[in-house]
Image (cartoon, rainbow, N blue to C red; front, side, top):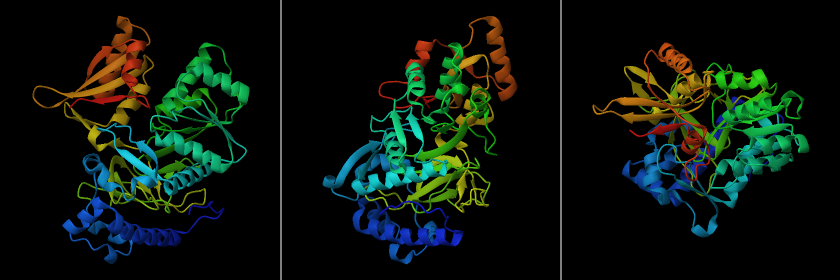
Length: 430
């Protein structure tokens, strides 16, 4: 069902036609096979056959994470015998959700990442070192592996962490690309610096950055991105995805936002009243999956706030592009009259030379307002370092959160509790 992309890119008119056709197919499929959406259509008097284009989507109520958590099994559109793979969300914003995939869905997932890596200037001659987990029901690791296989490139499965092993493999097997969380790339750089390893003499020339922002909303490199590039002269490509959408938005070489894959997903960016926002205005990413067989989603609100841009891209693609994630709606912090989003706070902490690592904890005080506790791993534990940290936070935030200094072992335990698949940098106890 999913085939290789052409070297010529579809026009905006062709994209619209693809989306309208696939939406009609999806609505018919949901009406026949989805217990959740059959009930939703009946309750809200939605007649799927009367919706013929993406423009008609606004007549359908949105679906939320709460729906998916409370009625997980009702989203399944196939018998259990057809399910090949069970994956789950990371549970960042609540209890994990199971996403079941059929063989067709696994093929679609491979096509999605093939297209994503191709967009990020991927070639069959590349060798990618995967610095992330490929177990624990993690869809992304499996998707990257499948997509790179379809690309015909080489793969080195190292897994997360262990800088010594990562560098040993880089110098022995000579990958020209890595797939990693940006903050871990900084740990690779620090490890190399401490041991006199000349990283710019290595074979690595590019990095696919996952899970964390490396750019500001104007597409300039943020603190994390700049720190990587200042030490390591490699090309950085950002990617945004979620388990639920089973699709990625990946940057091309222009670095001007993650490209939409119109044959795989419809993306709306909605305001507080569920109305589409114009380009350059923040809205909640709301997705409708196309071509998904096991657990398709219709107008699913991801909780992520982004902006979109639809002006032409220098790469020749006519698809919409998404900005880095500005924040998650549930992670918005209202602290002493200041509104903060986690990515902005992370960017600020990443810019602090006196802080090696951190975890942000948010909780409610006795009067029901937000309090922020920063668990910080300082470069030095002395009064001068403490003063610089507090002065920096006061200057940047205009308010000072509580600070608790911690040890490498404690921060590691906080960031990787139990079976965590990626570093936990935000703990919400509200």
